[in-house]
Length: 439
Image (cartoon, rainbow, N blue to C red):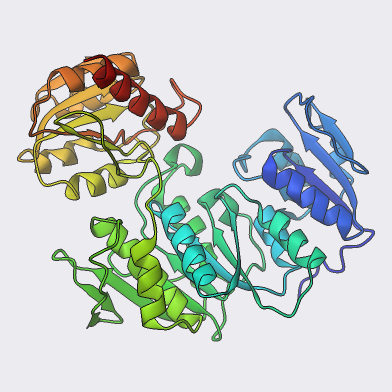
């Protein structure tokens, strides 16, 4: 039983005034809670009717709360969190809080790579079949926003919440129980935050923690051996073999997805997990396959760019870890000029790229971690290194021929030179487009 309910007249403190914090504040306020919002940043462009707030500091006023909702990314070892723990005030995530107030069917997905593509695919399949589906979580739409929409738009239709969840969102759950959970894959990521891979894995596995025998957990058997120790979910293991055959519970199945724009083993894993989830929701094979085959791939995820050029360009800027970069390389046959760099978050072992010596012709490095990467790869590849991103891209163009595949798959975060991976990917496309317009 949820000890925090009912929420009306409770004092709810919210740490962080980004999208999820603001959405949680609005939901809590709508439910009759006394809300106090605190953000350490000095914010001047936020207007919040009927909610008390402080910006530019975390004062002790947040300690006068019955419950605190923490925005993802606020470190559990920060000064304000330690104060809250010393005061024995319960801390939950926005995902956890919102889940208490929905009557919808929850499909929740996590993993290191491929999350956004897969939740958008599931959402698209459900909508194409006439289901009411609300996409939320780490994809940019807070769960609280969708739950508030659900409460304000009551109807007789079953609502499906399709959630992309990060390790940051999962580490502070208490009762969150999705009807279907999906773990796509797990490889080292965000180690700068979680300190080690074990902590990162534990956070991911929490997606299954509260599931009972009426719930399903869909997991990639190549990466995940066990669910959370408390989970009682019905386990469905899937895998895609090296020759791109599909297996569910150890049995080979056939999916006619030759017309799908999603290519490569990693995308086939995304497709298979989405197929299983939608089958559990009662959809027919033909309907699911038709939706898969018309689904358009997302920008910055092995995005094939068609310029007036003979080399082929791939924008895989979303690849912010080495596992994602390896998946991209696996999807391209040969003659790769690889652009790597940015900020390595995971103390990565880039030497594993030596297994692609027959595919990669040369590597061009840029950014903060270029020397760290170069030290690991100099003995295996022709390497060129630049501080600035644009110089690295120009070098890739100048050194290419009509047989080359120029792959931007940085294996690093973008924050040394860009706001995010989208800005990096868009700049890549802009540089190449401008180059071929002038030549």
